[in-house]
Length: 554
Image (cartoon, rainbow, N blue to C red; front, side, top):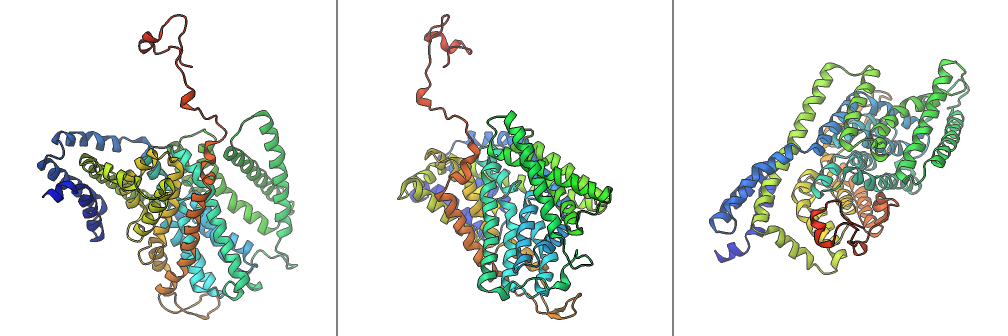
């Protein structure tokens, strides 16, 4: 009994892990463990029964949290776009653009994965869409099955680190920080990670070109009667739009000083997209025939998702909207885009709304369960146990970060990102804050690490999503008629390993170069609390300062 009394907090934590490993639902495991050990602690006089009276108020605080409204908004936006056919058009167009290069199809998958991540934010939608569309094409033209599987699964997980990611919303809420700052901090690591995937594909194209063949001439669309693909007109269009964006942005920046870097990028991209769209529309309406079919296709397929990205992320970054308002505008924009494409029906709308409701309830129930667990855990001083355990890790702050990264990596073998965010982040956040660690940087570091939970064999969800759409038996290709061998589960698992290594290197890069994340702070002056002083004005003395809310604060 003395052992139980002295170690109730670690026993409670490890009991929760056991329940989760046995397969019990996460929300109910958290709530049941919290209630059970809370009653045990009350019986052992380790916790006051009055503490449970705070539970209804804490649960009401969860369901009345306006910040969490961003979760259903962004989920609905992603599901609507997934059903609108945007992924198919993007993959087809970008695949034709990069297809003549070795590894071009794989690069197109990464590129589209990043675009889908910035518009949908849903891993399942990205992986399943790209698996259904691009995997048969890659197999048709002789891509290595392991690389094809790995690049599709890894590109789909970019939805967890590139805003508007759902996990970033949850992390910001759990750490008590701004979602907008979390988005700003995660943008650069997410783009670098996507670039690293492309660099790996290019390396494979150099070392083993047979694994990533180029599209044969007969598979290349948008070719005119002279055999030209129209890349020259696309290049000219891009350069002219870039020149207009450069001139227009310089004019804007000259009249608006001290604009943050992320706002500058948003403004440049907005001007570039508007210029390209106006030129393409003018070419079509005036029938000038100055642009090739490929150039027009790229503009009309790429600009709508880029416009949606600006509507959501751009308005957040430049301060016109909160993340919740940005999510609402994104949901409306996705509906408009889907209806304008003529590929959306009331049945699809109902399916998207039902899926959004299920996922939102899933998130709220887990959050309620984690609140019950954390109330009892803190009541028996479990937070102090975690704090003392981690504060005495050898190596100080660096040792703490390394231990947390390794622990998160191995827990990701068994738990998904929602479970990790709701279980370990409330325990680690206060310790990181006490050490003086920037919590936005800490949250992005955890997000990059938790992203590996989707591609970890054997329980990675992205691998399961891909397995559900990858061919399980040999089949005859509908275009060439040749027999295509199936994709085995082992090939999917093996294909994910290089991308797991890339993600681990990305975690190390964020650790070593925190400026990749902390650029969100901009150039705002930092106030040293030691320089803040209280003075005396002509009316009030220091003894009267407490009664003077407008007193002499310097």
